[in-house]
Image 1 (cartoon, rainbow over the protein chains, first blue to last red):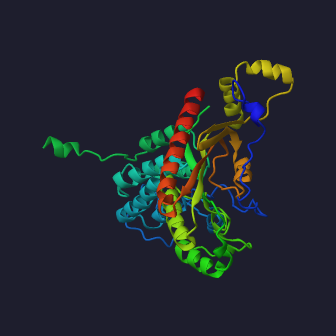
Image 2 (cartoon, rainbow over the protein chains, first blue to last red):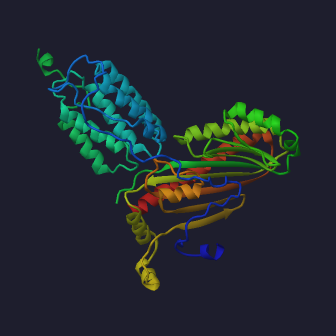
Length: 190
Length: 234
């Protein structure tokens, strides 16, 4: 080691060893971590959901199919958010949307200093969308949920690039989601 | 080639004793009970001269031994969580063992910055950090496949080692000796900063405070090195 370090620019070395001998022995099954993605699917609503109000021209354009077995294996720290989002299609009440948004915000705060910081940004965007857009909003339709679905797909990826995040945010805005409080221009005019 | 911000993936801290604490040999059952209560973990290993407890997949470890106590965390969501857990453990362990003196404090962190591609990061590091990389490549006459850097530093009572390079998630799991996490980025810039402070005859009462300052110093180094790397690779 020492001769390599003696002078001038840093020297490349073969893969970095972890020195201390008191670190744990390797586990016998290092692959025991579950799959990388959750199964997310766009489809029709479950009959069992409570519907306060139909959305758009179909009864419920969003269905997020969370494979429970995969989800239980998936060690993602995003699981509370996935589960919260899976629930919003069952009920479609504004209160449930806000409740889901609160779970997403909580995960985002927890993860903002981790290597999942970009995922935390996405969670905040979706939380804002659910907070500032109600289920009765007339602009919300099947395309809106498709955009949301795109966000869920991104969240299930271990790496989210900046272009993908930007495209997602643009899609949210284009498909009727509000990411900030809306202003009632008529009320303001009066 | 996008390179995101660094975040801590592993934090390791060790306090070394200047003399073996022999009483651990007679008090392993009591030590287990104490660790169980303090840490709420049950996956115990009891070698002859220590008691160690970990979570089910050995991702977080805490050890009270004859020569040292240490903690290694890989699951904390942020550094503050990890530091708080280690501090609580050290307080419990030192109170229980009452070792004569602490003679070394070792703090090591592994930080990762998610990267868009392994090859892109490797090539950028080679070009940015090695003068005349093309000359080296020509001399090898073989395509570059991987790279890594190690530097060691030593001055008075503190020494340090820094290691960095492009890495894939499976390599990180091998390095940390933990199962691969499904949410680890597939490719990343890896940065390991290991500092060791010699503390002759540091009293147990002052040990946690010195460990806190050693941790702050180590984090300062890791942040500055991470910043330097990101600047060089920008």
